[in-house]
Image (cartoon, rainbow, N blue to C red; front, side, top):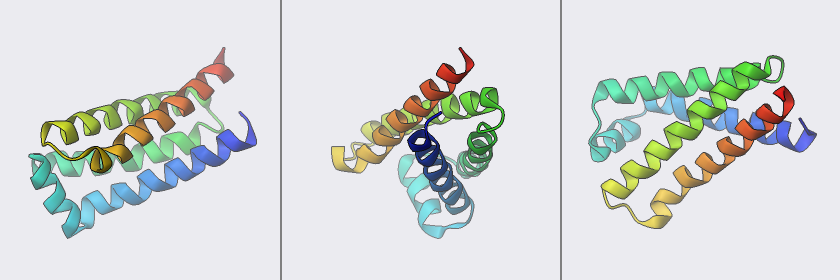
Length: 117
């Protein structure tokens, strides 16, 4: 994995770590999940998965299979997030971060796959 790929992976993991803690603790995120039509349990599960996935991405630097699965999970999570944004009729600009992070995680997933080939 290139230095650039590693840098993007670490930034991505830090973003999801931060967002995971926000999902668990932030009143703003509690309100956002309500706006998304998602339950409190789904908000907590999302936060837990984001924190776990962040650890998985960083662990992937040493154990690429774990990183591959973490990146695949984030790719799927961001696809679902994008679909939720479309369903609730958010604008494209509001939906763009989920699409962006879906693509970033797909790229990280492919990078891990290339290591394992």
